[in-house]
Length: 243
Ligand SMILES: O=C([O-])CC(=O)C(=O)O
Ligand SMILES: [Mg+2]
Image (cartoon, rainbow, N blue to C red; front, side, top):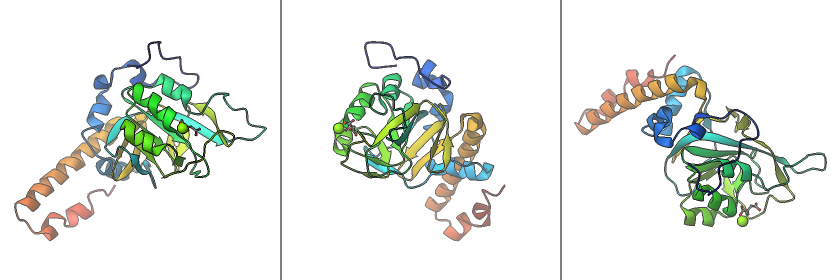
C-alpha cells in the first residue's frame, strides 16, 4: 500500500488501525462511507447525539470528496522547553500512510505558519494518501493543486513552520476544532466541510446515515415528480433528526 520501495516504518505511538493492515477496498466502513456525503454523516451524528463536524475547514486544493481513516499529527509552538521530533512535522505520518489514509494535522487554528507544505504534499501523493486535513493554515497550496492532492484547511499562508511550529507527536488522539479525533477514526470531507466518525461508533453512524440518504433520495424523486416542496419537506423532515 506504500509507494516507497522500502517498507513503511512502524508507527511510533498509538495502535495500528485497520487501514494499515487492510487494502483500501477491504475496509468495509470506508467503502460505505465513500457512498455517503458529509451532510448525511453529520445528520446521523446529530441524530445519535455525537460530535463530529469540524467547522471552518474548506478545500484549498483538489476539491473533491475524500474518505478514509485518520493518521494524526499533533503540532505545538516551538519553544525552548518543547522537545520537537528533530524532523519536519508530518514526515513520519506521510512515510507510514497510503491508500485509505487521510492525514489529519492538529494545528489549533494557527495562521501565522504553515502546518503543511508542498514537499509533504508530494510525499503524500507518491504514497497514495487520500488527502490531508489541517485545522489551520497551509502553504505551497499551488503545489497541492498541481499534484491534485485534496487539501482541506482554514487558509493559505506563505510562512514556513520551521522555527515556529513543531510536531509534538503523531498517531495520537488530537483535537480538530473541538472534535476529538483518534488514529483510525473515519474521515469524510467534501464541499460542505469535514466530518469525523469515531471508529467505535462507525457501524451505527453509517447505518443511520445510509437510512437518511435513502430518505432524501426518495424526497428528491418526489420533487422531480412535481410534488409541492411544502409537502416533501414537511414536519416529517423537520423532526427527522429528533432523538
Ligand atoms: O517549511 C514548511 O513549512 C514545509 C514546506 O514548505 C514543504 O513541505 O514544502
Ligand atoms: Mg515548501
